[in-house]
Image 1 (cartoon, rainbow, N blue to C red):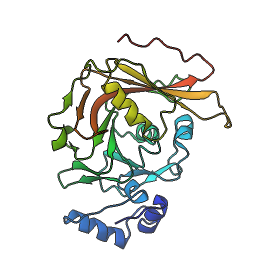
Image 2 (image 1 turned 90 degrees about the horizontal axis):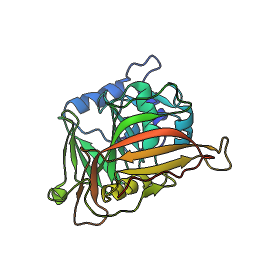
Image 3 (image 1 turned 120 degrees about the horizontal axis):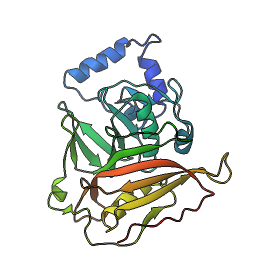
Length: 287
């Protein structure tokens, strides 16, 4: 079990300067390949992918300045495989937004971000089950694009999903199985429920992204907007980012009888730089 703290210290202790594994790390891998369990919390979760955040900036600073190999990101230990990026403290710290620049930098198509007091259990067939208090966000960049001519970080057609406790996801086939409590609670993407515009003035705030996704799924509108800013007392306070969440024909939600217990699949996410000085007034889609 890898405890929390500083993930860079974990890798520095177990990986030699030339990149080769220490005898201790070889023993851990032998245990893992033999069917043993390798687990970690916080920093111990970060090291599970082949690339990890090492000395990251704030989420907003990562959006604004990107990531550099050997500084903000560095090699992890890779227990989950080379094709999935892992991050942690996702919902309470708004870290979903920092995953995307890192994934684009390293060419990852899929990323999983786990929240606090929550775990994702990955079995030998690479099937993930979410257990604990909250859930995990799945980021799919397999069809995402960026505009290099843009003045700031941007991405179009990223797909974001929220996997709740008890849900399962197969990393090999990319198929989702809702928890038994939600198996009969499938929601229609455009059900005639709420009609109000869906907006978040602080999309990087605590649990804001999931709350916005839930509100959009329970709404006749097809689009929601979240804003991220650096704050008045920082450099370039006028710079922000707009996060546009859209329901598509593949978007689906599941609800259980328990309050605040949703699974939400396949929402489109577009991010673009925003001049906070410009008007944020936009026409909302008609209900």
